[in-house]
Image 1 (tube, helix red, strand yellow):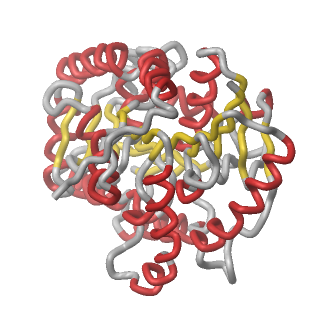
Image 2 (tube, rainbow, N blue to C red; image 1 turned 60 degrees about the horizontal axis):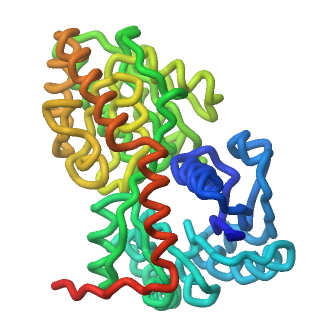
Length: 377
């Protein structure tokens, strides 16, 4: 088939865009022809691999008055689809974002990172009010699409809760040749994430501060892309580093080239993943592939990928608890190595792109055979 993968913005180099690429590679391996539909694509900031792909991008507004990104995206997507379809007539639409379009362009499949309605803060009443038409359209999209595929059990539970719709879990994969096993251990902690408020990077700073007060000497590297619209947060994060007196212990690296990022993974001692309620989380799986123990939040997708006590620790969001577990790993190189080996084995068995491809193939087979709704309480 000719398949269009729809993702609103592929200009960044984050987990969502990495998934979009992996999805395309997997579908091509299954014999399909692929094109990417986007509103925004900048070859200079996107993953290099997109330059070799068929990409159609319409452009449009990203915000209104520097705000209301979701509303701007909602209104931009209609133009995006009209423009891209004029360039490429697909047999199947795969929505990796803009789920509220999935009932309008058929046949369709949703690959869900997480329902948009659950991305809003409960106390932000204005945004929730403005988001109501998007919520209604998203419900129609999930009800009208042929098949729903989710990136984790955590996300599938959210889909069932929001739309009474069942689905298939297809965990995103990792390139286990590229993210190669390494016993290099240079003594630093690593955190890889988009740099934005909801990634909870303050937890890592608080844990590091607690370690410093206890007399432990350890450095932390925070590597990631600054999320568009949250540029000021980088300054906020740097100020928190200064407030805690961690200027010598913390390095923040932005827009890190892939080669350097791989070196950070291979050479770190422990990987910290601070977001709570993260839908999947590429970072922990990439770190395990490189043979590194992972400390992550017990709420969200990483609680499924990281085995507590075996490939790392899955913890409550408490800086003292995190500091204690970091100390355990810092003080025992053998435990670090054992957890690292366990993590590599777990990735090889469960989180390769080959495993992802098998699940996507099952989902494609179900297009045109609607899955049963499931009523949840």
